[in-house]
Length: 98
Picture 1: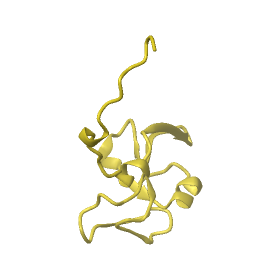
Picture 2: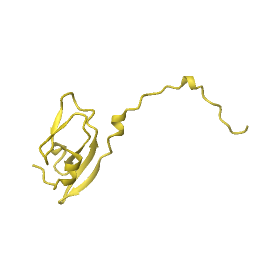
Picture 3: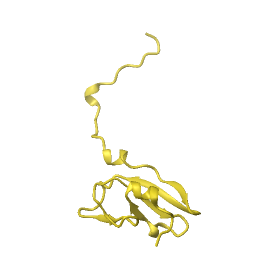
């Protein structure tokens, strides 16, 4: 047959296990709340240090390691304003970080 590529030897192929922690995160995007622009990203929480947790600024309940959540920070004030929110709490958040 003309133009047909020969098959590669399947035995030579190396397969890597899928890293699902990368699949569960999103690329950063911006959202505006009450005139404040935030950089927002979803996180699986799987890459956190052992025993690491964050306090959600909306409900004040801890977000434990491995729990999917939203990470956001004020684009004008910088990444030092980064906070971790429960996904539902981010939707309720009014845009005022303390």
